[in-house]
Amino acid sequence: MALRLKNTDRHTPLLLPPDLRDWVAEDDLVHFVIQAVERLPPATFALNHKGGGDEQYSPHTLLALLIYCYANGLFSSRRIERATYRDVAVRYLTADTHPDHDTICAFRRNNLEAIAAAFVDVLELAQELKLLSLGTVSLDGTHLKASASKDKSVTYQRAQELRTQLRQDVSALLQQAECADQPAPDPQALPKEIARREKLLQKMDQACTRLEARAQARADVERADYERKVAARQARAGSAQGPEPKPPTATPAPDEQINLTDPDARLMRKNKREGYTQSYNAQAVVDTGASRLVVGQRVSDCASDAGQ
Image (tube, rainbow, N blue to C red):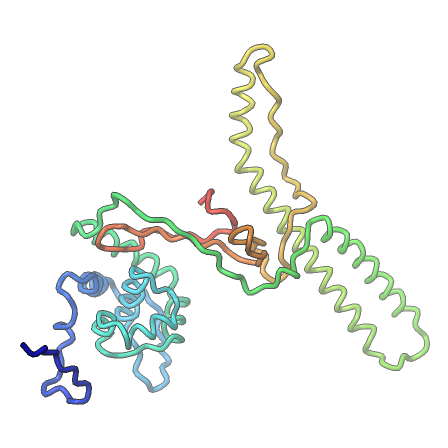
């Protein structure tokens, strides 16, 4: 019997316009996301009311696009834009339109609070419809590099030393400028140098203040644990009390670091084989059931996943 193969003809045009709904399974998550987002009021999202003559994408479309792509592990704006061409369900969601990555990114940045609230509304609706059942969730994290060089990091001890040195430099430069009688080849050089040192001194002051505030906040958090340990030690009698717990300190350690470009980022590395980078630690929690919905997220400056 002769072998029969299906003919794959990519050149014959479709005789009738396609209906994208026929290409997406009835139980696909995209149907729920579209219906859930349509229920939300669009007034909470920022739009460019000045306009530029071009039509704008609906907030409902962009929000549904973000929620569906995030639920399927697509977080990059460029990858989401590419999915509007490659992924049939995404193409159906956007009605065969293709928002560019700049539009997607700008919408997310300009509507962070509204998007966060909308995510909660969609998750609550999913739970009511029994689409989301939080029996088992999956948690994973990754390091996101900050827009700062690790070479711009400085320790608390070094910042204090530099601050003292800069104060001395500024004082000496001001005295030199006051006592200068003869015109210099470049009369603007000295004022520029003074301004540069004063600006750097201001950065060091801010760095020290941030480190001290961070240490104070950490001490406040650790205070309750310290008091619990003291009470437990006092409750034990005799030599069984053990060593006296150390009280939390509100002074930064001399080797505690801060980055002058991005003070919120930290030096961290993924593992012992990787080098240190100035980064953040981003965590995502996903329902392991059929919905694959993102039910939680957190970005922190803690390098280890153990404390997340």
